[in-house]
Length: 281
DNA sequence: AAGAACTCCTGGATGC
DNA sequence: TGCATCCAGGAGTTCT
Image 1 (tube, protein in one colour):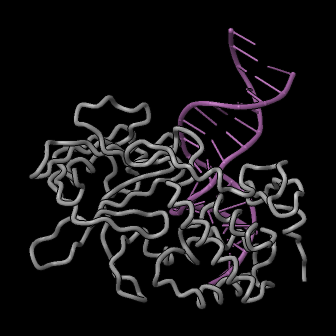
Image 2 (cartoon, helix red, strand yellow):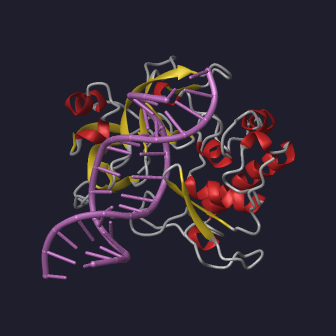
């Protein structure tokens, strides 16, 4: 059943935290979403939203905003399917061409959330985006991405390049895994100060990230276990494509050196100590 | 203002 | 067997 054109018949929140970004929280969310129709699907970085239908001849003013955090999923289920152990929010949907169905928000670690938010025009393009995501930069895979200006922004940052890659206000969509993979491909140490990188090096990093993410999407995403599945509950197959992430101790595919795991900014980073040397300038 | 640290959370893996 | 500790990380908030 298609999501677009479906109307929310009812909603139930099983974990208040999962709608913490909704104005009014769990108290008002079910009533606020009831009767709303999804008119399309949009994405920017790690935010996804479903604009809610507006009166005729007017643009949508609000949307159901979803962030998956680490472990969040949206899954379409039969109306009477068993509740998943980590079901946090349940929407019952009705379309005019199919039976009722269920859109489940499942999230073990509850870093994800959803809520109804206003759509606001961005300063640069006037594109309508959810207010809580308005500060998020264009996605790495957005064809309108201005790589040249992103390179300039990155090269003005006086901090480690990996921090910058994870900063969603610079460039969005890159998380811890793809940052490590892109830096390995570009042969840059994650703790290299961004402002010491050349334009060419910075370009290579961005293009590597794009290439890696595109390849991952074709493989159905990077998943490790049953926690990470697509809308139909299927796991991705991209782990076999990873060169460094989660491969500490294994040989580098380029030079054979043992991959290292280091910790900074309270996160793991994986790198080849030979290919990615930390040169200070 | 920019950059860094802290915080939220669950449950599988690991150690004693 | 059982209990404690570690680990995974996106991003908002708070700090320096």
